[in-house]
Length: 229
Ligand SMILES: C[S@@+](CC[C@H](N)C(=O)[O-])C[C@H]1O[C@@H](n2cnc3c(N)ncnc32)[C@H](O)[C@@H]1O
Image (cartoon, rainbow, N blue to C red):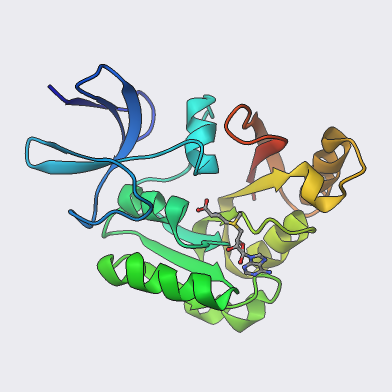
């Protein structure tokens, strides 16, 4: 029998125990019956849960690796930079529920079409924004003020992108997260040197670093940096 229990720390996050006794991280599906990336769905007592794969989502990997806080709750407002086709964004949408809002930014046209058709269309808490995250002035008026900026654009200057977006859209006392793939910024440098430089940029721009979560073995050379504004 499949059973579900709440995550010990995070509201809106669950542990599903499958028939085979496997322990699976999950969120409650806000769009029942609809899969976003082929994830397993589990029906338990009238609710549907979606497996949240740590090999596909860095935030899931961070939860598996015991991140202290995710700064997401029912009703949170989130600016999500680099939604891609919505794998992680869809789980964030599940957690914040219909009281919350996720503004999802990506600049790749095909990815944005898929995100709109497969994810945003089925969820009324997602507002897709086809834009370049390096130019927050172009969309800040749509976003207003948010509680959390999640930045996973796999680009150099992620810290700068977070800082520029925070200036226009992040509440004071709000939080920022960046997924830093150290080697995508400069492939010859030691990964640790690279992400420490990103951290310094945040610290010089009104962020206090709260934690740095290593995402191995799910994501090689990746850390998730969590900071307060
Ligand atoms: C690693 S993927 C994001 C994966 C996604 N966060 C997830 O966990 O499901 C990076 C995405 O960032 C987008 N991206 C890169 N640079 C960007 C920019 N300057 N503005 C907006 N999107 C950008 C890419 O198009 C790509 O879809």
